[in-house]
Image 1 (cartoon, rainbow over the protein chains, first blue to last red):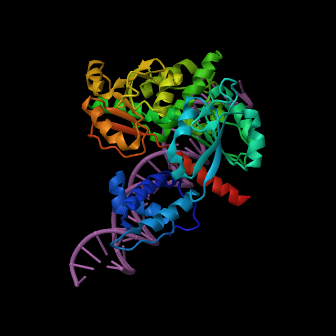
Image 2: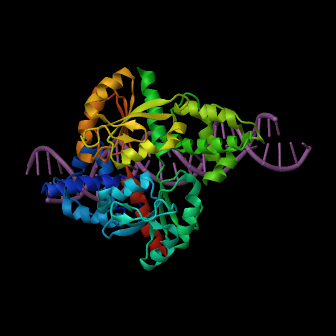
Image 3: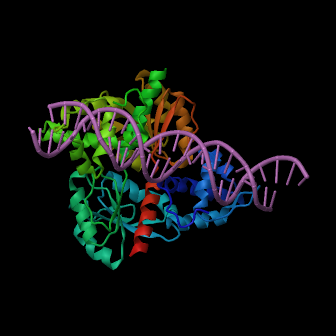
Amino acid sequence: MDDNDKIPQPTIKRIPGYLRILYDFKKRDIEWISATDIANILGLKSIQVRKDMSFTNITGKPKKGYKVEQLIDAVRKLLGWDKVNNAYLVGSGALGAALLGYKGFKNYGLNISRAFDTSIQKIGTEIHGRTVQDIHQLKEFAIKEEIKVGVLTVPEASAQEAVDLMVDAGIKAIWNFSPITLKVPEDVIVQGEDLSAGLAVLCVNLQQSQIKQ
Amino acid sequence: MDDNDKIPQPTIKRIPGYLRILYDFKKRDIEWISATDIANILGLKSIQVRKDMSFTNITGKPKKGYKVEQLIDAVRKLLGWDKVNNAYLVGSGALGAALLGYKGFKNYGLNISRAFDTSIQKIGTEIHGRTVQDIHQLKEFAIKEEIKVGVLTVPEASAQEAVDLMVDAGIKAIWNFSPITLKVPEDVIVQGEDLSAGLAVLCVNLQQSQIKQ
DNA sequence: TAGATTGTTAATCGATTAACAATC
DNA sequence: TAGATTGTTAATCGATTAACAATC
């Protein structure tokens, strides 16, 4: 029962994977799930799953495991995915459009309610049900709708400029898909999603495995 | 000089960020770069940068730092980005299209040379200069062109099926954008790019910061 | 009951950071 | 020369894993 401890970041990152399995078990009307089940599906060790589970404060039953529904609720609450976060997307290019079209975010507590851009060509066009708005309207809407989360998918060169507008509009958490380090005030959180990091790991591992051959 | 040691994964993930800064310095004709410079730009500690640099086997000069050009070469070699990896993309949906349109991969040693899909609607259409091909042609082309890297952007439900075809075609490294654990033979590498993990970190941090207020 | 599984404490492992000598 | 910066070794920190008692 690792209570008021801070949850380790590696644990946080594994939890969405657990949640996907839990939803799948629920859909198949399975009532109980053990750490061993989860570990087998994800290729982890059961002790790690159990340790991670301890942060939810859910207690399992020896021989049975955890109650699927109970664990879903606890995990969703832990991540703050029990309530929907409305978010704005800034940068309606190809990647932005892909994110706007992704249905899965509803399982992750995220609803991208509006999309913005600077380009006159894009403003007014419709992407997956949202009409792209002028970025200069962002502040007005963000304040009215109390938006705290922004998704940043603009090209590298205009990223900092866009962030400044988002911060000024009261946005407190930025999901950053551009590969630069953003300057933000202390009370604003940035989560960077850097594809090149993953690609680097892939390439190094590929080299390694080819040497072995 | 951490020589024949294995490079820690956290180090590998930071290196592309270093490389971006190095390219920027080179463009601005700056000859030397210090660990302190890099650390300041990325918000890291200089000692961490220096430790990471030790894996390149490049030696710097006290008071000056590292030679930008030399470091670029060493880092590119380390990641295997000194030669271009030709890759195929499987799954020409919105995310696949976004990746096909991304120009930056040329800096990351990746060239997505062909795109495939199962859908009759998509096959034959052109996306950013590549004509989408029938996935059943993948094996023939992959063998002829000695393709080792595959980018997987199909919907969750068809991911395993697509991977089986890729493995059968001799692909040895898969950059997986679907949120499932793929079953592959031992000699095939999978690098998962899981957006939900990053989103989870963002949401937990947002909760934390809102509690503080 | 026997055996599987939980939950906790302790040991191990690996990465980060500190300390400091070397050097330009 | 003085001071900034490198490179290495050692200390610290945090996450994973092992060990094992508790329990259904």
